[in-house]
Image (cartoon, rainbow, N blue to C red; front, side, top):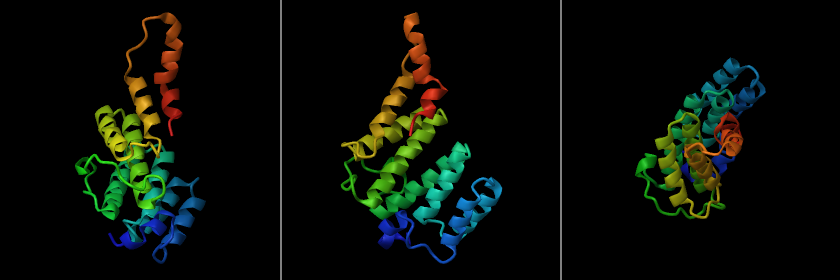
Length: 187
């Protein structure tokens, strides 16, 4: 990855190649016009396809536009970019399930962990429960101190899998936990 040396700055939006910053600013200004914003994001992606700031902008564009499958595709790409920066296998399923140092302060590690959390969240929203469970299991192994808050997402996943209550008095609480409102409340 060409940004590996400056990855920390790249995650924060620095070290942008010429023209990328302007394209990202334009996309932000056009966020209420999704097609025009996407054109600007595509221009940024052509100029810096592996830059973390570009991937984050694309992810957010798709996520807030409710294009969850597209957002998850971007998350996969961002996982590969983050893994390369950390010297990990680029396929997240091949990453050894061992604690990653730097979960509290290292930009590369946090980028990877938050991306994995976002990937798991999107998998939950897309009802790809097996994928979500596997991503969350890896997240727990990589971040055993729960620095990025994966435990909350895992708790929501487990609640969604719980069988409905037998007692009528608990049905309202069950619907609230497992209904669309519960998914909307997730990070």
